[in-house]
Length: 127
Image (cartoon, rainbow, N blue to C red):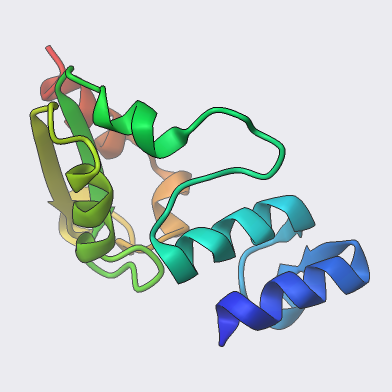
């Protein structure tokens, strides 16, 4: 339902009033439309972008590190695994970080207040 309602609301109001509806912050309507398109189709594309993002992802051959948080219901590990599967030539590594590892709640937003562990994890696995 969110993939249908939030783009409509963002279009109607000019932006998504995320804080008022309890979903994110003030988000651009184009971002919300792109997000909903991916959520409904599992196909990455951006409005007014001629590049084929899906084809581009298939050509990625460098190692890819990804992080998800074990209490993030907005971006669960399964979603990230689907994204990594779009890069079959890469060597993906998925890290799941906990609240204990982060030193804060391991969800979609709280990690940004203390991003050191996220940066350290990415640096450690990209040497």
